Amino acid sequence: MLAVLDDLLAGAAPDDRGALWQLAQQGRELDANLVRLPPGAEVGEHQEDVLDVLLVVLAGSGRLTPGGGGAPLELTPTTVTWLPRTSRRALAAGPGGLAYLTVHRRRPGLAIKPTVFAHEGGEAPCSLDRVCPECGRMSQESAPKYCGECGERFPER
Image 1 (cartoon, rainbow, N blue to C red):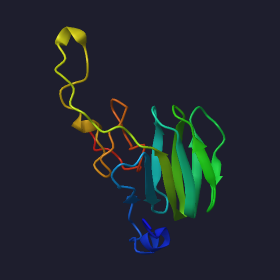
Image 2: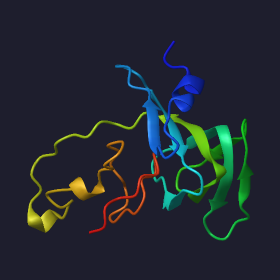
Image 3: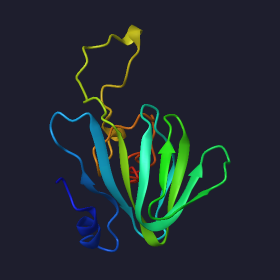
């Protein structure tokens, strides 16, 4: 047994936000996160460029708004939503908050790449401003506002 999600949710403070639990076993090919948003909290519109994500609502209610002006989807316990890679979306918690499980293929670990010469282009020497302060996920966006994994807001630059 890895976790009892009801126990984790029951032990959370009313204003706890972000990942309450993460799958962390060595050698896995899957990632999963228990995420909680307090009442009225939002995860701004964002896009996951690399992975499909399965979102399973466990408690509370909320709204998933697809990017591009799509109709909002009401989220209630037992709602399962597939978020294909490259799709844009935003989440908003209802009056009782929102708790959900995300499941996706494991991201490859960060690796140190050989030095790139200026004429070859490449990333800036430091990308720490793209690492989520809550869950440690590296954002694919160059100037992220919210973490695509846990919903934490990135610090203003």
